[in-house]
Length: 368
Image 1: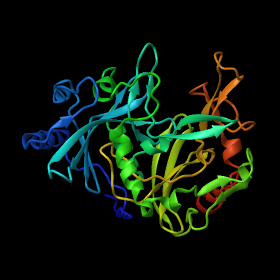
Image 2 (image 1 turned 60 degrees about the horizontal axis):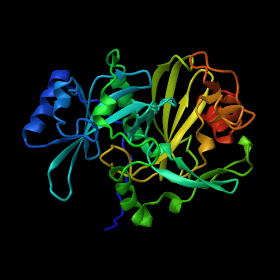
Image 3 (image 1 turned 60 degrees about the vertical axis):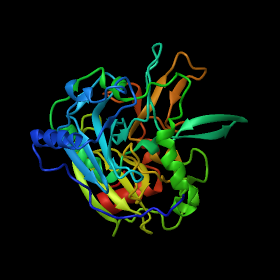
């Protein structure tokens, strides 16, 4: 049955003011009432053993009708992450259910929830959520819509607070214990990730701009040709909900985040600003429904070239027919990052995008 999803504009949440012992005790008390942990990976048969293996939550965050219990930060050679327990009440049974998930920090500096993992025969890849089919050069390709795994903007700062609460502990096992290991050929996520999205889309009133793109480039490889549908532009004068501060070695020190509403108050943006770079995370709806992965079930369609991070993948691939593998529009890749030689400076593209130039002028009061 389809239904109209509620929306709400709320301040960003903060971690619960509880000690790590109090959080652990609260979580164990929850399990004592009969709530069961669910895991999709190797811990599927005995998910409660996650606690005895050291994945006891130390922090808690609440957003809308969902409670998140989080471990202290963990690290492996591929990513920084948290083991998360997403607690929701099952609408059909009325019972609280606990889903173990992996929340990780993407290289764009946004926190995401992994949909699955591929770890077979030397392959290693974190599932990037739902997929779409695109046509290029007469061929069809299946591509990930990575923003479908972005956790709500309202909790991004809280996740960063947890991330900085302690030095990360090296961990090589959690991903395999928690995440479903998919065959190497499977890009798309499993039904428990996609079905809540399908239900939400069944009522077209839930789709942002009817499911059509709210932003596109009128001319290929021309950053100045961006067109945003009227009303969906970020409101730099009256729509800035809040700012937060952090640091990034890759981006040269202080880093600011700005959560900004659109002029029509239907979507929200997240801008990142470092000493030299400004980039935009794909915008989100204001719907309050979260799936068991902790992500929104409705997303905002827009041209992905608007959301290139300050440093993006751009490197020579000896196994590719092309000279370079690049996620920066052709001709705009700058110098490689001092911290990651596989990533190049994308500011030559970003700084010519009109909405970023306007953000610098109206919010940062700087020009490039």
